[in-house]
Length: 374
Image 1 (cartoon, rainbow, N blue to C red):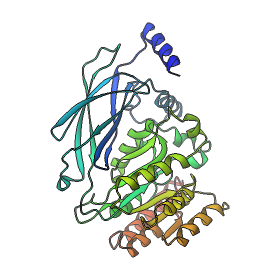
Image 2 (spheres, rainbow, N blue to C red):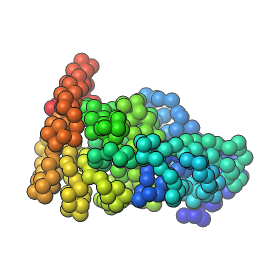
Image 3 (cartoon, rainbow, N blue to C red):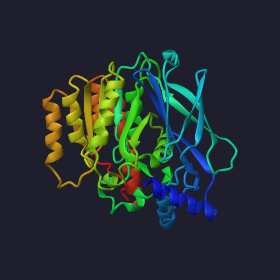
Image 4 (cartoon, one colour):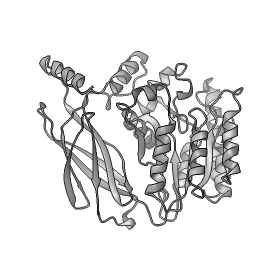
């Protein structure tokens, strides 16, 4: 693979087809006292800043370019954070990892620590330094619990469960072309709010989607006012076939275990969907981490006739003493969160109102883009 990449890059250089470098910075978090920030150096092919388009062919082309990335290895990226500085080098797949030990973190400055990044040099590329900013989630001492959530078909309607039928949604290259499930923004904000403000309790997004989609997810959440949080996505260059075949267990299991170890003082709420084995994955997490899971919600995106395995897994979760809901909307999850004092009173009412508003909008325009039945 390395030799093939080298030959491909040499051919592009000879034909003068290389594009300018760009620096992509991902949201970081603190793991056992160590600040971790991940990013990537790629050729900029105009995908990340492409304007919204309703053209299916253009979106299909942009999606191809988004996944067919031209990685830049050996690039030097410098960083500055909290009075410290250093530099790292990108690997063969363009990724780099910043790890900062013994950084004096003031929990009173939670929830975010800014990290300034500069792409300084890259072999065979002539460019001015490129700057980007990441930020690292700092845990507030007033955090009561954390949230671990899937993304595809949990908060964003992606059609991942029926990829071929929903290919227009799957290939959409902008956040404007994607829809949130009704009630998501209200529910997640209610879970994250606490004594230290609206982001007291941290949320982590654990998904089998590749890092190639990070910018779409982040912009989507900002537009929909869904709380920001570190994303633990999949490196597509390491397991492209696994992603195409929708194999999810290994990645999600590892990331959930990693977060449990990183924040031993926290318990968690788990939120996923019925289309990607999340019920089975979360049941396994409940067994491996007794007493650490406060509640589980599974968003049911299956056809009405599909019943059996997911219900069995949800019952296993309940049998282990963890409250769990399985439904087509967040109404039951919001009600459970209020009952368990995980969300403020009125959360269910706000979620149900948003569901009703989306249903009325769908009926008015004669289309049903998402499931809105309570």
